[in-house]
Structure formats: C-alpha cells, structure tokens
Image (cartoon, rainbow, N blue to C red):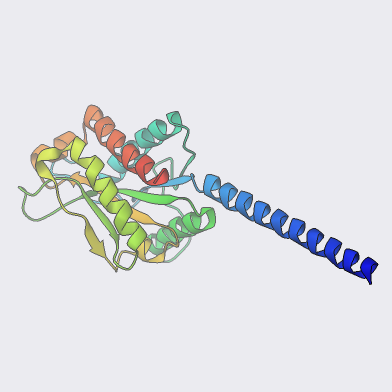
Length: 226
C-alpha cells in the first residue's frame, strides 16, 4: 500500500512538472507571437494604370503615396521595425489579365496583409474634395473594429505634429474594401487634399513628405509598442 501511494505521488509530481512545462511553453509561444507581430505592412494606394486623385497642380496621387510610404519605411527600419510594402514601384497588383484590374489589385493587397498578419496595416492615400479650401490629414478606420479605431486615434495624434492647424477627426467607414476585408488592425491615412492648391504643393514637396512620413512612422511605432 505504501509503495502504491509513493507511486501515485510520483505520478502527481511528474504531472505537475509537465503542466508547468506546458505553461512555460505557452508563455514563450505567446511572447514569440507578439514579437513576430512587430511586422508592419505599408500599402501605397493606387499605382500603374490607376493614378488615384489628380491634384490641382497635376500631381498624381499614386506617386505621392509611394514617396511617403518609402520614406515611412526608412524611418521604421531605422528604428528596428520590420516593414513589408504592398508595392515598391509604379504598378498595380494582382492578375494583369483580370477583367477588373482594380478589383484584382485590391484583392491582392488584402491577401498579402492577411497572409502576413502584421501588427498593423497602414494604407497611404491623398484626399480630394469639391471645396478647394478643405485641407488637412485624416485617418479612416473600419467601423466595426475597436482596435482599428484605437490605432486611428493614435495616428491622428501624431499627425497633429505634421499639420497642427488643420486637424481633422478620425472617421469610421464600413465600405472601403481594404478596411472591411483585412483581418488585422488596418487604417487609411489620407495625408492631405490634392484639391487644395496650398496643400497640393506641400504634398508634392520632398521636405513635407519626409515630415509626414516621420509622423506616420511615430503613429505606427506608438501602436506597435502599445
């Protein structure tokens, strides 16, 4: 009887040790997952045959989007954050023979984001409006994503440094394909209005693009380390 009790006690101790080992492995796994999610995806909107908005100064949105995204990537990389771009050149994504090239392009962007599962996806765009006096950066998020809303608010706070005089509130949206279909926190940063003559000139200026990129990078970093 005594030997049986000793055997059962030994089994109990072994089970406890195994359980503790599982807890340690689970903790490490969670930590490793957190580190891997320090990846960020930058999505320069439009490209190729899709120029996006055309500024009052003739500048094409696709070019400004890419310039700002590339500058943002450099800042993030300098700070040790891994970055993947959905595009690095003036081209559309997806099947070149697709009947609807725009739809194929958007599907490919979303697929890339969902496959990579980054900490956040930031799509960079330029805005436009019928009233040429309207200006200022603005951040959009998916209506039904609380994480995306929080990321948008953080980003807005950092964009205030780039243009403190024309602050615009974050805006919810439930129709934009990229916001609706991504499975991770995603936001759209509209850097400014190409329909505003003064802002269009700023957005085409390399120094201002660097200033905007620095603010976007800070917003991303604030979310990643949150």
